[in-house]
Amino acid sequence: MGVMSLFVQDLAIDLGTANTIIIYNDEIAVEEPSIIAIDNQTKKVIAIGTPAMQMHGKTHENVKTIRPLKDGVIADFQAAEQLLRGLISMVKRKRTLFSPHLRMVICIPSGITEVEKRAVKDSAEKAGCKEVKLIHEPMAAAIGIGIDVEEPIGNMIIDIGGGTTEIAVIALGGIVCDQSIRIAGDEFNSDIIEYMRREHNVLIGERSAERIKIEVGAALTELDNPPENYLVNGRDLMTGIPKQVSIGYSEIAQTLDKSITKVEEAILRVLEMTPPELSGDIYQTGLYLTGGGALLRGLAKRISEKNKLPVHVAEDPLRAVARGTGIALKNINKFKFLIS
Image 1 (cartoon, helix red, strand yellow):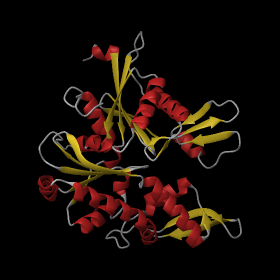
Image 2 (cartoon, one colour; image 1 turned 135 degrees about the vertical axis):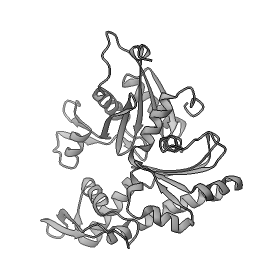
Image 3 (cartoon, one colour; image 1 turned 30 degrees about the vertical axis):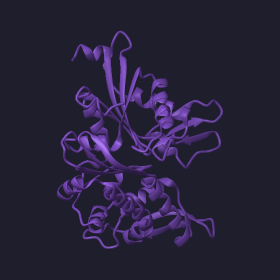
Image 4 (cartoon, one colour; image 1 turned 180 degrees about the vertical axis):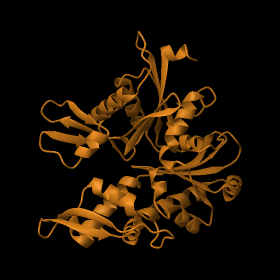
């Protein structure tokens, strides 16, 4: 294995709308926001990941920040290539006298089209990868949280990411039925921005909305351990002067209600499509929540009350898909039927 690593170097990549995680040698080597900053005059990349995110919403006319992925798929082909190239260069790989064969497994939404798959592969190849394989996010998430996907037992995965929510019933190493909806973290942020504008006459940016979601985001208006109110800074739309507003979790729960209801409806649609034998399994095993959205306070309880089924939140939901992708890559012969 050590000799092989001189010739072939493997990277498992969770190329997400909000964050990209790269696993190398069974460890998380890179975890950065999926954003780049470019110079408008020279068109050169000036920042990638966290430094670019710090510039987001604060740039002047000579600098532009780009999020290459939208709704789980590549929206800007060139920026995606530059993002991948930059993030791969951050990985501290073994130095060799010659360029090793770079092999990647990248996870993709289950509802992705063939054209969108091709865009992911092309971006990775242009970023320097010699061999690109793809795995569906719900399957990677299931592997990442320790489910034996080859067993004849039905398991339901709900992966709430930045751009999409992936809901899938998995059994015998395949996806039996699934739904991919474009309601996820970014949509929650948009709801918060709109609420602040409508109810408080305050204009905030994406970063502030994300911060509100982290600090006081909730799916229920009543929580057992409520977070303290969060002070939000923005621009008063009436006067144009900077303003500070105190926001509570129950306000955000009401704000996100419509989007969370759409996620619940998608879960119900998948449950309705599930074959009866697998439905019996799911009644026993429950639903598994992964992705950054799984961290939303009270979400598991709300989904459980809606469907009358147990809901389990993954131990490390943010990294479940990335870890599953890494396991699939490490055991590529065992999981080759999942990787295309």
